[in-house]
Length: 490
Image 1 (cartoon, rainbow, N blue to C red):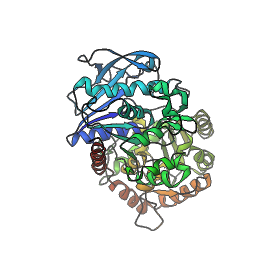
Image 2: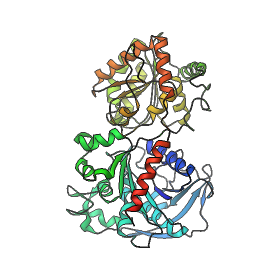
Image 3: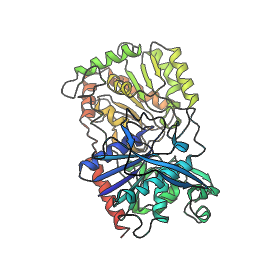
Image 4: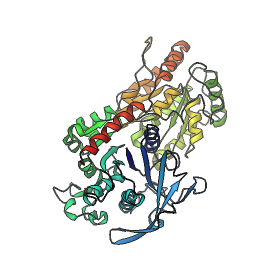
């Protein structure tokens, strides 16, 4: 199949969260099965074009596209080689994408022109099949920012105007990110104002909601784990106001568990580590632990674990559950390796607790991919107390690195981590239910008790390292969704 992916992110060069990893690994896995996969992203001004080997696509001329009442000049670029298994195209528009991030300014404030950015990105993506004379079988949009590509496919490209059948699939990576705007922004999208008035596709409580429109307009819709699909249709807390919309899609909405990128995340050949290791030879993990403690200038008390955290410092990730208990645990001898940026209040709180316990807590407030790898390998426990987690990849990688994850029972964490109890030969990590600091503290105490039993701990590590969350099962399910989406256009 010819698959056109529309995404705001793609690892490793344009990344905010897990969606970037999924876009990269899924497209690579699809290409490995013989599909022609082409990914279209904005050309962000922060990208180093020379380092990333980004160059103009000379066979396509500069163009002008209308966004609302304004014309914007664009130019298509390509990353790497057009003969690569996955072809990556980037849309240059200096007025909208230069010198800025993917979704927000440095202080976390969203862009005022995010709807214009989504509009232009999606318009340009749907032009490519015509310009390249490449019949597209499936338009695969990732999250709300790419939804205009589905709406334009439905409203602008009918009959033979889009080469190929062009079935549509929307993958929801996080239902909380819906892209909601005042209703009069329909003209910014270039769509009829009636679509933003009840009962129009875009209308949502008097406003314009891109994700809601995408859920209704796409031929097929999926999210990134079976349990999160259930949560979003059965629990209003997780449905984020769209529970009924998702339910209305019936069997056209499903959950497919993300796969892990084991080419990038594998302690057996990870160049970022002080030493490599695998489940048959764990000596390297001890060296990684020693190196991490030396690098971060922290040390646990004897018999106490090192707890790693890599991720965004935002409410969703359960940071508010962790902060109130860190000082108490640090006094007891726990050590913490924290890597991440996010909400200013959480960054300040994390910086303060690390300042109060410098010998136990290290907080690095920046994105450092190599350090992330070293924290996975050098920690004894990996903390992921998320309030909600559509899928999560970190827990999969922690398991592969022999670092049992501590997770809350939600979303994809429920699908991937089984609770380990004392004297049990089952379980791969530590699971708690209630979203309270006391519940996280209790499960960490339980993990501490098992950590003091070397043979039990070793068997726990082995069970986790044997888990295989590769992409093959997921890719087969995506192929089936593609086939159904294509059939809807015939």
